[in-house]
Amino acid sequence: MLVGILAGLAAGALWGLVFVAPALAPGLAAVDLAAGRFVSFGVVALLVMLLAPGKHHWPTASQAAAALGLSVLGFSGYYLLLVLSIRDAGVEVPTLIIGTIPIWVMLLGKPEHLLWRSLLPGLVLTVLGVLLMMVSETAGVSAHATQGWVYWRGIGFALLSMACWTAFAVMNSAWLRHHREVKVTDWANWLGVASGLGAIAVWLMFGTESKVLLAQADIAHSAMVCVATGIGSAWLATVLWNIASRHLSASLCGQLIVSETLFALFYAFVLYGAWPQWLQLVASLVFVLGIVASIRAHR
Image (cartoon, rainbow, N blue to C red):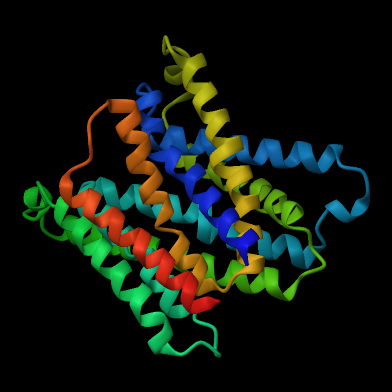
């Protein structure tokens, strides 16, 4: 259990880097940055598969199909829906909707033997933390409220995006528990290759024209950011998340997702040199208490 908890927290630490990546590569649009990250993920995963000896590192047809389906839910499809939601509804409300993912994963991933009253303290603290974080981020939320059906279409995309990653977290955990013969690194590689293919499709539909990208003065620096997040925040984070998913229940993994927000706030503080708002600090403390309460409940 300790191995799973540490792996889940480490995955959250790597995912948190994605929130400051746009500031490190300001010349890239969001779609370009995400596509670069997931294509790098796919390339690294493919190289590991090619260099690793033995045929067992390659998936069967059914395993490849499972990896492709889950990669759409957790990577390319999830991000495409998120981009569409931000395009139509702005940044604030979609971000708040996505912020509820840990709650849904906790609810849907509860082990049968675990009583609801045992899970309730961690769940309540997580809900409270999300609400506090929402309050701290609500400035300007109404700016898009007058755009009519386009705004609500964006809300619909955000809800679908949330549903995709929630389904990915629960189904990925279940798949790993039922296929213990598959190494977590192999599974991360298969997801990576599938995600890279999906990222190429997303970039072709919504990305910046290649001539425009290559003409940017800081394109080499931006490419390094994509490669770094592809290796760290995608490939390594997925390996660690798979370890957590194999050792822990989906409900406890859902609780550990909030560590992504905590690390993102810390990185933003380091990068920008500005303390988080006091509500964000309170929300962070509540999140930590929620993680502790959930770990105690699952012991």
